[in-house]
Image 1 (cartoon, rainbow, N blue to C red):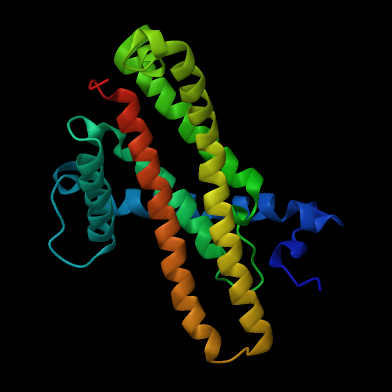
Image 2: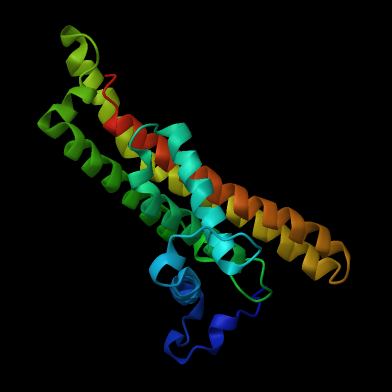
Amino acid sequence: MVHFNWTQLIPSVGHDWQGAIPIATACVAGGVLFLIALIGRKALGTGDSSVELSDKLSVKGFFEAYMDFIGNLADLVIGHGGRKFIPMFASIFLLIWINNLLGLVPGMTPATDNINTTVAAGLFVFIAYNIHGFKEHGISYLKQFMGPLLILSPLMIVIELVSHFVRPVSLGLRLQGNMLGDHTVLGIFLDLVPFLIPVIFYFIGLFVCTMQAFVFTMLSMIYVSMAISHDH
């Protein structure tokens, strides 16, 4: 059965709308993120007010709490120097979260249901943590692939390379599998019982969407932490 999708209404999608859904919904998510950025920038204000903490429930207070949450998480996982990665991790979380949440909108299929999108996000993390690893250690970063004993380095290099190259795929498969499963279950119950019962699954879906964004961000932090660590 082919279900209606709002992206069918976009003229540029054309007849092959099934294949264009991930691209269209990713564009919608990008628009939402851009709007969030504008709202956040306006809420921040200018001058002295931009550095003063909000003392009430407001848009500025929400963004301050969000950035503080990401900052505390970076402190916990990475430790000293982790806060300089806050913009990257905050962006990763919002990107994944907003895309996931689109799947809870009737007639919308999130880009994170598509393996191309999720593996692309995993590749970004892969490239980012290796870049930061080289920036932190220089060419000595390659020593992390050789293991603790020189005699075992040929074997360890192979193991480490396989482990590293699998990471973006595992990140993508984990996210895509969980989101596809969650939205499939929600879609089934919407078809069977369109009233009341799906509300339960919407709450479960909201939890899954948030948790998967959290797990993706947490694993990204762990990979960066391992890349810049001096304990090897």
